[in-house]
Length: 187
Image (tube, rainbow, N blue to C red; front, side, top):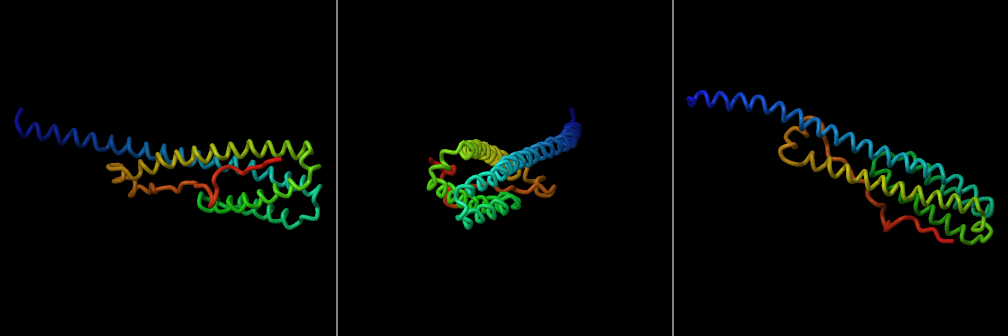
């Protein structure tokens, strides 16, 4: 084979491989981006479930401690703000405020033995604990998906096409300030 023939073959292979690489890389980025979006939707579903439980908890406690209006209103405001927040950073801040409000609500509930003995409150408490576990798992899954996506967007040679095609690094959903674990509820 002549040197010119070798050069032609190499050029043809390069011309054929570049579009294949671009297609495979683009499709991989789209798949990972969709995984991040799906993971965020799962976080949102679990948090909405949690937000739906909070008014029931407030009403149950209110039946036993009606004079603690400020605590109830703070929890409801925090719940509404958290439900309205969008994106990991805003949701993270709103969740921190809501956790503080729930801690106050549960502390208040401890002062009322009849409330602690109520079956309704106990079942709501159990359901909230289960939802908290599901939300924690969904956040972990989201952060794992973001890690895989961000690594793809930032790694060479994928970063050569990720930026120009609009693939941007996504934010993680971190624990709120001062959060070291789930809300502790003891009765």
